[in-house]
Image 1: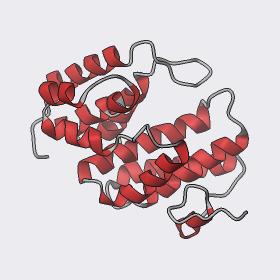
Image 2 (image 1 turned 180 degrees about the horizontal axis):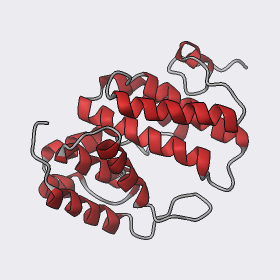
Image 3 (image 1 turned 180 degrees about the vertical axis):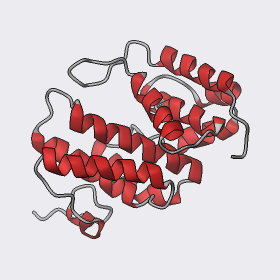
Image 4 (image 1 turned 90 degrees about the horizontal axis):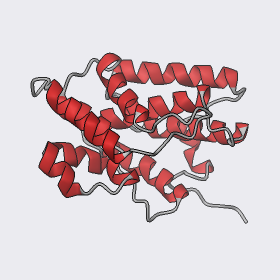
Length: 204
């Protein structure tokens, strides 16, 4: 790794993110505190991905702060440095765009992310798809859960070759999802037949 693991910085990121996400909850039936999500993403990177890079782990913990809280870029840069901010910016959606455009852009931009941002993106998709499979939002239909996991698979397809253990863990979730949700993950080659496909054209 390019830097020594700094637990104090990682803990500081956890405290910072917990404060920023205070009052926010996940959409699962238990309404878990939102902070559990970025912490699980960082944990997957460390435990499954076998990555002990302070910059990556800190960015993983902070990855939703710009998108889902009032955190500013300057706050992150001042407290954690430009390298961490750069990763967070790479994985932050533009909330001024509609949801389908954001989904489409994640697929389009995924191959061009930096290595460190790809690691965060991969772990984020792993944790989110696992949650949608095992502890989904109460109001989500079966079809919506299938679509989310298919979209996650399409995004991950564009960052494969980044970290084999994380990709294997993601593939295990896909395999379990196909069995439990009774559907088949479609190949990436047909992505443009789906609403989030980069070249999708709706037939009227």
